[in-house]
Structures are given as structure tokens and as C-alpha cells.
Image 1 (cartoon, rainbow, N blue to C red):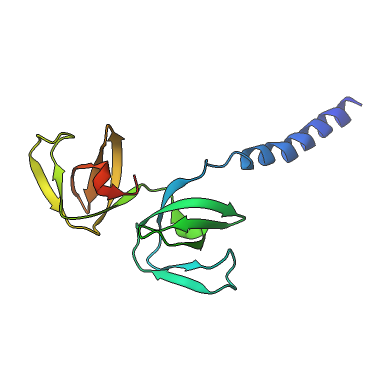
Image 2 (cartoon, helix red, strand yellow; image 1 turned 180 degrees about the horizontal axis):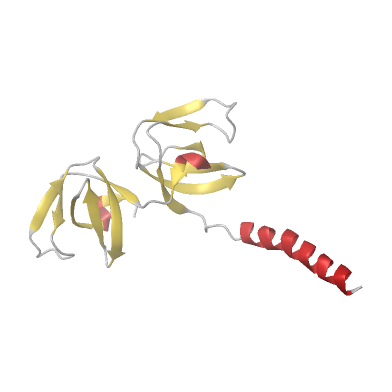
Length: 153
């Protein structure tokens, strides 16, 4: 009797445990980035539906707005929405410079010296975001950029 009870408890844990972990996904929407050199955005969540767009820009930031099985509905920096296989996305935080040429400063302050200038469309990795600023790294050159000058924060 005791061994049957232990076996039943183990079986219940095996079934309920993973289901509980899977039912606690990241809250939508969330930021992601394209993790491969080439990725296709599709009209629907299936490899059998037409391709809307083909991206050839690793680390491009995207916003995940919906999920369906192994697919994610994303929005790109231009506002285009479509579906992409989840395996093509990463949680690596990246951003793209918007508008005009933007200063990357030595500290998170408008009075800090300009370390670099970033052109619109430049993609970099972001860390340490707070108070309207993010640390922005573009291939080893880093500085602080205002969050309203980037998309993906």
C-alpha cells in the first residue's frame, strides 16, 4: 500500500511538475532578438504559410506579442507583424537606433562627454537600463544612450 502511494505521488509530480513550469511563460509582450543570420517572418504560425519578410540581420530586436505552440508573433522595428519560429529568437537584449545620429555618452547623463555617435539603424546590445538610459554596446564600442533614441529597450 505504501509503495503504491509513493508511486502514485511520483507519477503525479512527473505529470503536474512540468505542466506547472510550462504554464508560467514570460509575460507578453516581451523583447527578443533574432538569433540567426537569416530568419523568415510568416503570415501565420506554420512553415506552410507564405513568407512576409526575410531578415538577414542577426541581433535585430523584435517585440513578441503572441505565442502559438513553437511559434511567436513578433513586431519588427518598422511595426510589421508576423510569425516566426521560436528557435530563431533569443532573449538577448538588443536595440536599434532610431531617428537621427545619436550620441553615446560616457555616463548616463546629458552633461557627460560623448564617447561615440550612432547612426540610425545601428543595432547593439543593451544592458543596465535605468532612468531613461541604457548601456549600449556596438561591437565592443559602448556608451550610454537615451531610451527614447532606441527601439528595443
